Length: 490
Image (tube, rainbow, N blue to C red; front, side, top):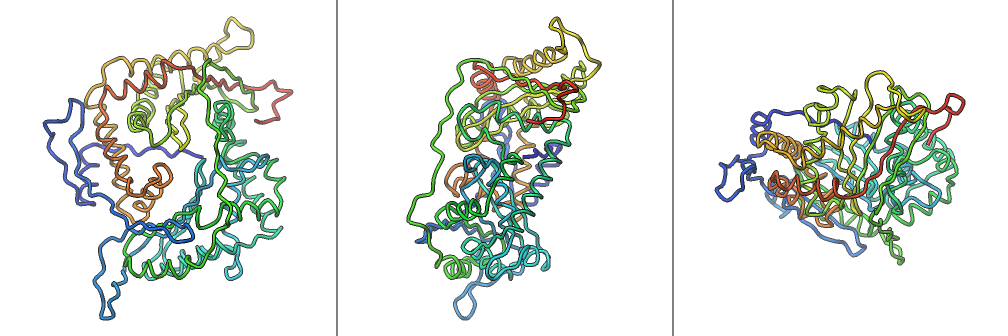
């Protein structure tokens, strides 16, 4: 998946904006907080109503304000907007054998018709009334997102129940969506000079877990998919007991409950359990090196990767802050050190990809300057220099001084992103969805914010030493293939 650049926000103005929009108070520095801990924000908690239907569907409702009852005792329908989302517990890790990218392909197929809906009907149900819709697939989940005026919520609930139970995909739709995904693969992986590098990181890093198959998949495996594969996948994963329905915004929860019972209540779940990934990634005991040779590589690049815990781990917040300090924007340490000061690289970064079953920390850099011959024939000395520089940058953060202002800035940027997102019904629904996926509890949506605010400099240094400097790593070098063999890909 593409990683959007983080917004670079000034601390004072950003927090004030978020606080004004959400009714927050920036507290004075409490006496019990250790040095280097930012002033605490008293963030209003999300308090969703959570229940589970008899068919296994998890229902999460987060109204903006309680509706006043009308004369019939019903709540007042809102006049604003609402988010309707359905999250399925199926992602790239659940792709069938030999069908990498199938969960992502299926995301596209879910916009095809049913017995009562034409192809692309969700555009008409959302865009034509001033709303919008979208979807995404990750390693762990597939989510379908809708934003509509509040008086259209019931219609979206009916439509989501309809495609959950009665999706109809023919051979022509399968061919067209395979072509769309193949085009996306060419654009993101083959046409981008460094697309092959980032596409190859998961296969090079994961030893046993199916996270090793990139979410976007491989074109040759998608082309082998059949309609039987589609029907089997839908029956296996697209069922009430494998889904979370989230409704947030200007809605009356009493009416939403009634509509959910009406449209989703009659759906049934198979008697068989949902298959789950049970593979556990073994701890790496030795360093591992891989060289990827690809066509049209303007300059060589290197990626260093380390094992990390999952998204719900106690170290997750500190790793998130560490990643932002090292690679979160142009003013982060690795871009400043390797790009602006040396300069060894034309770009550099650091990422903490913390998934449900485990995580990957990665530092990467693309070489700058003219090729530099090394002692080994055919090896560009810039690659070794980049490796040394990346490791030195991590080591300095793990063992050197972290100014309080630098730490506060990064924490504030991360917190502001979360708070700004929560100013919309869609953003609040997304926060609840990720809490269900990563922590199996919608009520835990605020836990990550509290943990983020509590991160101290010594926490950042502890997790870098424990998860990066003191453990084996995978090194992936990305170089130009010999001209005679430069037509292939990963």
